[in-house]
Length: 400
Ligand SMILES: *Cc1c(COP(=O)(O)O)cnc(C)c1O
Image 1: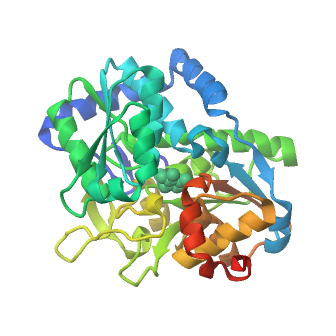
Image 2 (image 1 turned 90 degrees about the horizontal axis):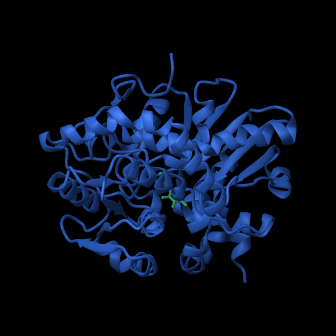
């Protein structure tokens, strides 16, 4: 048995491709070509060269001495925060734009919530001289002003979406609508391991460079190419999928996923989809979804804009269902406190999303010899305002 995708596009009972008739041929075409392109020597050469010279890979695997002492384990941080544009998202957008070009597409569309995926997409569109349209909820356009300006500066057109609540799920609906109108010439760059098959597998493969590097780096550092535990935060699930990709069927390696509890997984103000969701279909995928009894989507709530998604990748729904992964729900205040702690103990200000993974450390029981690799998915520059306005959550570290 494998936890990777099966030949029908499913992970256990999750996944598949639930798309409108008009997109069927486009999605089929992508499904029939993505592996051939990704495995071609030409693609691999261009992709790896850009990851090295443009993104700055390999990202370091850093032994966090003071955090290791505090949590009684051997903690290594996978530093995706050091990538160009400040997070892991660029690994995926570089790969998808190369794929789009190889498939002869002329125009790129994307959805974005906080704007991180929008910026990563606008960046590679500037690099490759491709027109770029980014759909973003009108409320998010207001809340995420700096990222909107960055996308515009990079040459992208931002289309604010006013339907629904004006947030990520509405932006995604609108991007899918655009795709339906331009299926032949447009490539939709999806930002996480969500959407119809083959997107979850495509994005996981493009992020799998993270675990490929972890393997080599652990071998060099500890003489063994696997850890005892892997830890990552999950929004849609792409940084987690990349972190676990090469270990997913290796039962020696424990998988710990941290989802955003918001005010609490049972509070009704949460983004903890695996805890609070039920089986449904969202954005082309059969997965866990936060929904009312009659199937209306419930808005996700979290202090972290990047984890604010009412669905979850089908990969992770299956890992949780089969108990292959342990899923912990981390509340807003726990994440903020953990961000301050990492800042003071290691001099690294993490993204609020990544801080959820760090906060999960205190919920674990480690042996001193346990090797733990935790992915710091992004840097915290974008979150400094939020950190300062929530100093009261930081405990001892908030007295300044
Ligand atoms: C977008 C984002 C996430 C959440 O997305 P995943 O697909 O779950 O990885 C996590 N961390 C950072 C820094 C992000 O920008």
